[in-house]
Amino acid sequence: MDRIRKCSLTFIVAIAMATAAFADKLPANRHILIIVDTEHGLALVPVGTPIPRSLALRVEQEKAIASFVRQPLRDDSALRAEAPLVFAHAPESAFEKARAAVDRANAAKLRLPGFKPIPNDFYFSVSVYFPSLDATIELDLDFVSYAYTGANTYVHAGGNNDLAFGWVYGTQSSNLSPDAFAASCYGSFTASADTSCQTGYYFASAVQATVTTYGRVNGRTYDGCGYAGASPCSVGVHATIIVTYVWLSGSEYSTDYSTDPVTE
Image 1 (cartoon, one colour):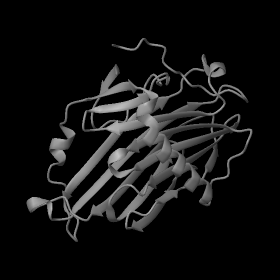
Image 2 (cartoon, helix red, strand yellow):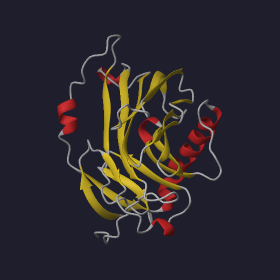
Image 3 (cartoon, one colour):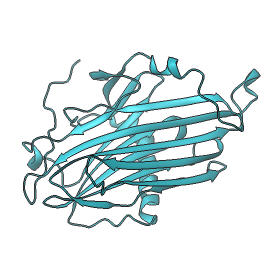
Image 4 (cartoon, helix red, strand yellow):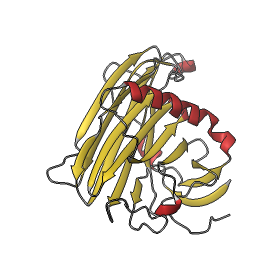
């Protein structure tokens, strides 16, 4: 794997799109897929994926003995003190499970109210995938025409998570006042059922804005904690994605993909 640069285990994905120098070289719809691999301290992206210049990501994972009244995570400080993650390119074969999960998530997204893609619009999205809970947290932007932009937050819990029950939750906000993008969503599930929620697209007329997505998947396992692993665990993953966009004309917005060489 090629090391790109370090970021902390708790990190913010800030995608600052400041120039459009490479916009004409990018596909009409841009998707960045990130796999969170906390076991090895890595944030994985497919080989050949251009990395936004100011990319950083904030993620956290929780695991504690379950109780009916949720208590503060006892080892939270240790979690935050973990060694920095390393962004790394991984071969396409490493993303088979993640892409299959995102495909399932997208199929579910199309069935939910509030998501109606327009064929001629330009879509930009960032998907953060957690293999531990088969969870996807995604920010979608719909660039319609000059200054007119939509934002959607989507949170998906796949069926491969071994949870007795759980919840999905998402919010989005921006630096606009009033905040035209502000929205939230919530869902619950039992027996590892495939579940998702999304805010639906909210639109604003703004030449420039910073949009923040926060997504979380929480649940309780059947066992795995306590003495001999016989007690249920409270587990959770969450991520924050921040994107700053700038419109330059009626058909161009800034992308600012880094051309810095990859560090070996």
